[in-house]
Image (cartoon, rainbow, N blue to C red; front, side, top):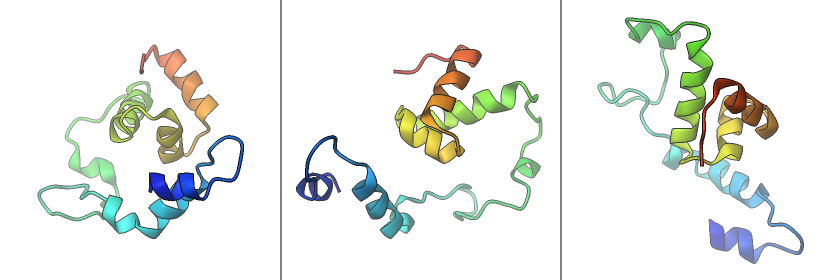
Length: 102
């Protein structure tokens, strides 16, 4: 994937476009089962139905941000994409929540 991105690079800053193309093309490889007990990648209609104790509305964004950062190994740009927000939006949310990431 990196070789492809670098070899197709023309000039300036390396674009993430080749990475996106590769990930979309091989999406099945990158999908991990969401639920280990069933081995499925399909989330239930209500993902909260499996959780006994719900987070508060204040806690939920923090849990989502931490999980997105965990899944992307700290890559804020990728975490923002997962969450459906901009990188600057993620940075603001991290600052508001007092979350420090590397």
